[in-house]
Image (cartoon, rainbow, N blue to C red; front, side, top):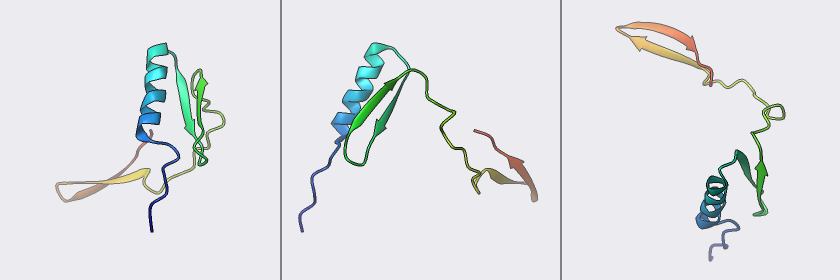
Amino acid sequence: MPRTRAKVTQSDIARALRAVAQAKVQATIEIDPSGTIRIKLGPPDTASAKVEPNEWDEVVVVTAGRQKACKCRA
């Protein structure tokens, strides 16, 4: 069974990244499952981004036989 053709190629993504870099602006690049590439100018919209707790946010650090848990924030 032959593979299907990629909707978005690595060169398409690189072209979008280069365009944003050349314009010297802040932008967010979104790629839809349908293959549409959208470049939104301006800083990223952090209000709409949902930050859910992750089980890996708490890291256990083992040093010299002692365990210490620390909360990591991104």
